[in-house]
Length: 409
Image (cartoon, rainbow, N blue to C red; front, side, top):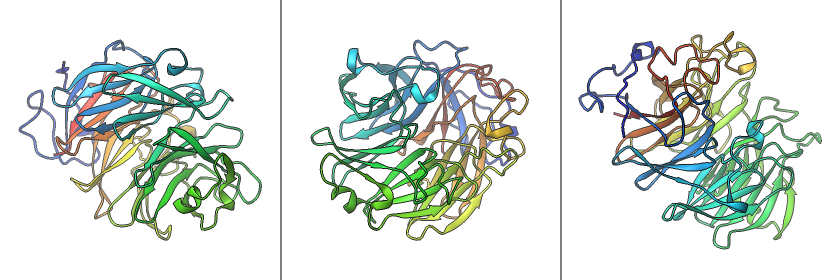
């Protein structure tokens, strides 16, 4: 069912293209706007809601829910929470742990008719047709998560990174056999392990995997790594290779970024979401040329996690959960009562490489997905009170945990 509470302060958006008000579905509005908020079965309205990434596949929106140890299913036509995909025994998700690094599920990707989701020590393979978890592919034994992944549909190869390992690594899985074929570790040319790994994307045009590396000796606040697909496929089965040993690998500096999300844009553009950990640093989205690594635009639009490109609207959608009123990073980049955040959905014109609008969202809204058919945008949110550090969530009407729904036009 739909919730009927409409946020009261869309005027708080720094750039306004669409107003608030109107009916529950706001069908009379033009421009990007809020629609409604959906409750999630089993998640209380006042919950400190731990979720991670989401995607639209077919007629459903899926996102990972750690509170319920599940992949939640939203039917787009009815805007209703219709199922929760859970496993049992070895196929069960980890749920909420002491920190993100030991929690799951995490990232989620559509792989044909199936879903692959990162989890502690493993990748879970789920079947949304039966709402069951079919298999657990073990990638580690250290008790930390496999986090975010991406898919090469041309060669049926799935990449997922384990960022909190002593030496972070990416696992490559053959999706036809659902078996691990290779691993790539991340130790830089100075012998230092990566500070972590974030979103990856496969670019068919260049046959490359791109991944955000959180930090190296030469680029302590992040670099974009380009891994040649042919060199990945040439790794001997069962072998682990360090990324610097791959012929043709490229590392592009991202500036003072501390990267998170990644999205392939039009032409050869690639957008990097930054979540700066430097107090007072401008919160950025960097748009690079993925053939050269040149920074084409540096927009004050960061503080997010997931960023998605939609070809229908030719826009990027960024879940800027750590945006602030000043546009600069909160203390140490983290939201708190003393250094609060003002979460927004940031919409960027991918052609002009400019910010179009910012719409207020709910607490910790760091995940975003858009349905190109309906134009609906989905963003899970926590309750206004937990975690602490959202100064305007309650005032904007985002009091309860659930999924906020927006419309692109």
